[in-house]
Length: 289
Image 1 (cartoon, one colour):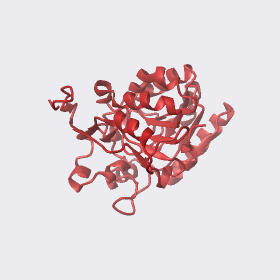
Image 2 (tube, rainbow, N blue to C red):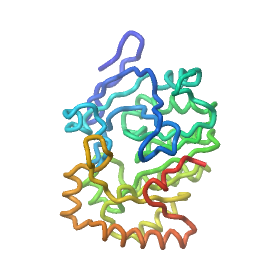
Image 3 (cartoon, rainbow, N blue to C red):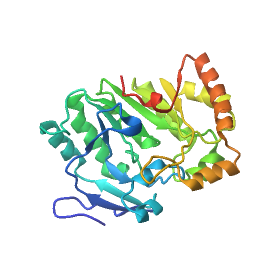
């Protein structure tokens, strides 16, 4: 177990991942790159125990050893809520103003398994409510349904669920430590049913068995929109992209840019028939309205 005189004792493992606890001076980072339309990104954790094969975020780990060990370590920012409180009082560049646009999260999943025990993300949300930011939450975890009561207190919020495939076989090949596809879609549907805006991110799109049926299931979830993207290989050490191993697997599976575009066209047509728009790339990640 891990802790100190000021903190409750906390788990030092969750599943296959070790957990350490860090304190941060700030939890808000001026946004850049893919999400530069936002004012800030907000990551309550570093690392992610989901450890998806294709995840670009591993390349942001501070050492080569942590890049290689992606999925087996999590750094929990134990004073994240306090950092939000400080940002509301700050006079510096990280000052949090009412209505600021925030993307949570750009390099981790704010609802990865340890969140169920630590509730760090929930504490952050509680601190954010009075500022009423334009908040986008990106996750693949049904744990997010726990915080529906808080989501409903935000006027401008979107909860995006990453659902990259319709195939459990494919999911187990590329992201075996995540919830099933149907569990995610049911979680999205439950949140949408409470009047909270939901998006579905088929990003990066992995092999899809039945794109028409998949799109029809997404429409039934109550999602307000959908976005796709093909895997992008990294061009340099700190350029967001998918690891070479994931790209190799996709080639083995016969998943090419051509097949992506063919599949995307079917999904776009099917969603369009339901009155839903399909975005691509950064256009689908604009700040919540």
